[in-house]
Image (cartoon, one colour):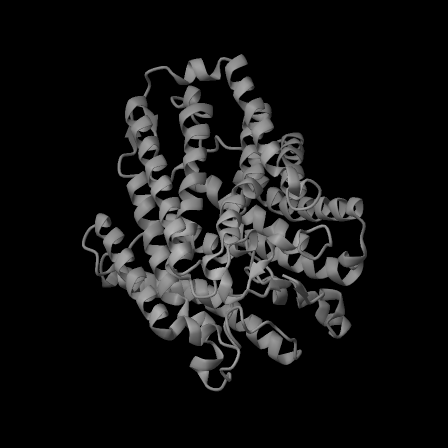
Length: 484
């Protein structure tokens, strides 16, 4: 979930920027483009090995899981309704959007309790409705080449980001969730990393030069968006926090260059399984350079921003870490889909392997936190492993709830769209939804001045904003129109 200068006592209010009235339209795009934070918490060197950072790295899970639980409840309670029914979409919206908004505003201190209670409710419904009994039938689970788990992960990332990029403008948004400037691990620090992961799990490694020739079609749109954002900022003389990506770069450039260099690096792997050691070697070399002085150089406030490298040292220095995470995500996706059909016993073994991987990942996060910290700005080893652990843990829950239980009783007659309509709509036009959310954020900041709103008003505005953005892509979904 990243967003703002992407998903901390310093705050730059959108309604205070001196833009000509017509240019307020671009405000959301400028501030939030994949993730541009409105506020950043200054971190000191002592945060490199902080136990508070470790605790924060774990507490992001109860913040993003209400959306996961909302997806599961929607599947249970609304699955009998027609897929393109407006009533189904509205019911799913209430089940998903309400806890997502409340987890970052009203009930931030009770997210863990909410997850436990709703998790218990889902378990009771599964047991009372004999879903678990049916799921235990010895049938073959068809994972497919594009599992529903990937669809759910993408929808989760897009929707949580859309919620966060506006929620951060309200006083109800906790400062503990703000993005870290140097070292730290908070909810908003997930943003750009989650986009790299979701891009990786649906990507193919480049196998030969012919695949490289097709890269411009994917990379060019991201670079154009990045360039457009930079040009607009320059034309209106808008101040951006250069400690995020640098003076000229932004998240769109990061994603485009990650796709480009990641695909080129993947040519070194002759088989999918070689992506794992390749990503770890790149990550190890990246961390070595950081420890040899690159990290200190990037985070130093005494270095002038003269020249391309110095001016954009944050964005450029993070690229090796981005590439490592991208390749690692492709490997995980290939591992998950290595067999498209599994028996129940075989899928249970897969779940145990995912649990083991997640556990090892969290242990490595603890080690990294004690050795050299977690830093999103440089995409160091601690940050990459943290993203891997969060992703693997969440994917494991999605696989268990949906592949193993909720969808299993209807595997034999599963249609093309077995998931909630809410999920399918966002997944069909994910980039459209994200860009629309950015522009709506600008309008809200211009017209409603979020910092002046009460808690009840904040929640109401956020719900209406999310209903507008998701409702737009749902209309496209009903008409089977795919834009981007």
